[in-house]
Length: 339
Image 1 (tube, rainbow, N blue to C red):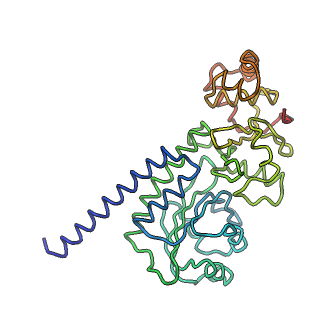
Image 2 (image 1 turned 45 degrees about the vertical axis):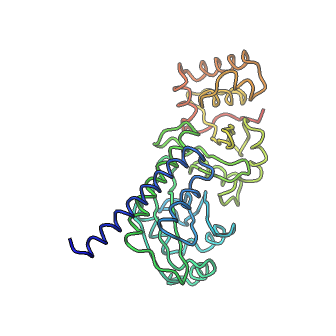
């Protein structure tokens, strides 16, 4: 082996070991920190392997949308106004359109060279000279998941080796994040999570489905994602409860430091009272009779009565069937009101 080859082999081995440590650390973060800070902490760890100046990630409209829209996002070393500023130029952002149209592929670019000068002005304001981004399809939500890393004007461009590491890392990042979301909403991958959302108590979204986005936007015009509307945030501390969202009812269920949001759906012509539906949602999510009674300030006997009524009205015979019916995506027929 030539001396140069030996150096390259040693470098590759060191990189592989560093990447493995990074992925193992990501697994520990998923177990210990939970979804609230998982992506941010995971990317900070990846930054030790592939340095970057800033980062942006979240869920975005699919590539066939007329105007890209970020519905849930997080950021590192970028201002709070970043998403709002980007939305003003999103329809003209060539790089964004390209990455949305090529899911699973890492795209890199350098320079302030977009055909639209407003996009270049936006990039200059935030020193986004070198870009590396990957987008994934999220069939269960009806949206796209993206991660974008940036370096400034005076830094080196992202290279092919960093491209490969980024792709492999984001595969792990996305899968672990999806597992956390599925655990919280008790929904497997597929098309069953479009009606759901997960929010922190301050109203910032950790996950949101396309159907829930559409319902909020339809009934509360002007909503642009990322933070829940003020009218919804006001009810988070009251969870569990059922609230009206225009013609649609929405259940808010507590989950540790988060609140699970789900559009009210009815199946088989059944109509449940709001308190019955809330008890059923909590039971399907894994809470015991005693836990539900404590949460709703009811007696265990009343909870049993509610659940028995739910089983009869929905025509189900098990907790699994109950959860499936409650998550079904038929049009709402209940004119629910918060109890």
